[in-house]
Length: 399
Image (tube, rainbow, N blue to C red; front, side, top):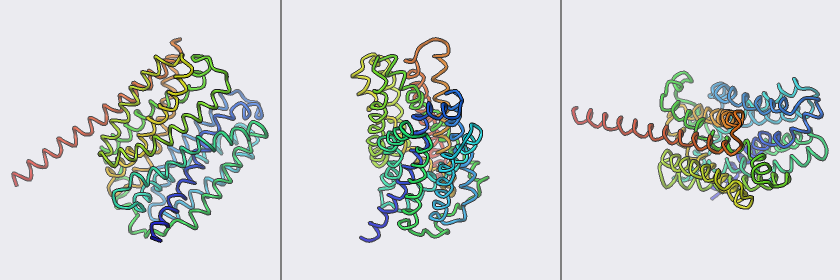
């Protein structure tokens, strides 16, 4: 009984870290105006701080995971959270564009490694058959951050100073440090260290196919989410303050979808759960194009899209871990890089139709196409697996 309680506390420690990461990743979007005004730059220039953080995630995930392969997971998670706390707090002290850009890049570096290592640790802490549920508990911190943390951080940044938002992130980082130190059990290095080198792990072709699946498929969600504000104000004709309510509804949907996705991964294979999730995402984004002009239905749809989109998070993470045997932490961390590449590519691609004068609604069409492309990649992976299994079966019979 004590072990079960300890494991729950350890998972909660991972969730607190996820809350802090979700807070710093998304709160910047709510205080861009304040940041740009304070630093004397344009809002598009302030948007570079979002890209700098994402670049830090992409660079840091495989780099730090490889460097820390021989450390115990508890020590590595603790060190990652120290890095996170220090550079997010320093971001609040930045006095110019260049310094904040550099600090945002450094703040993003531990993001992927924390979630990647944390996901593998969660599977080790889980009861038999409950690995997906354990991973979803860790990811719940990120989803809850969108419901509670980001609105609070945005309010503090708007009412006092944008620096306060980053000090809040630093405070959450301290809470995560304390919880990891007190609640995370010591897992022996032999149990957790990667069994193959980084170079060997990167030769896994199915791992790269899954990375592409994450980048392209989840880009469908970000194609919609990046332009949800103008969708609400310009298309549905709602007042600007409704954007905050919509973001909270999307966050609540993410919380629900996160746990629903875990249940799907337990009942089905992870990859089949991904196919169902992305297929539903494709359908719902197409439906959104039809009903977005109705303000009431759009607000309901905001919750539904958030829920459906996040059903993919846990299944794809499990699929990556299952495929990366011997290099689970590397694969899991790289998947976090892929999520952030999906964030950047989804926002960029969804903006192209608008650049050619087609309107905001077409961002949902781009999202649907990206989600459908993800489905096609997942189906292709399953077909290759089936063909490989038939080949091995024939070889076994001939021997």
